[in-house]
Length: 124
Image (cartoon, rainbow, N blue to C red; front, top):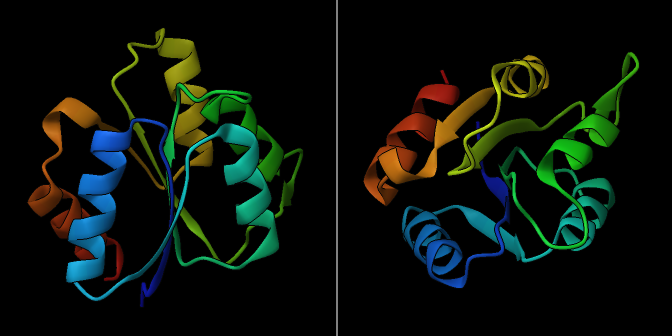
């Protein structure tokens, strides 16, 4: 069951849209606007789901994910991770992130309604 969500997103408009729709749907949501802030939050508290942007100030989403789940160590064993990006990565980078994440979504394709559907599907 997904109840707590950490949204790591530096775009104010997108972040506010996600946070508002997730809270309206009944989720407890924390929002970080930089990579370092997001990584610290992910390590400090156990979240059911982390929404992780790729292009972030201070620390990229790829580096955060590598630190949270790497070398056989999962520092967030009770969290699922959905990578959200508009950044067109090369295939190798995308595949590396997909291997560590529970989902990989292109932001331009994701409305708040669609995001809620994807989260509901993760719960099954």
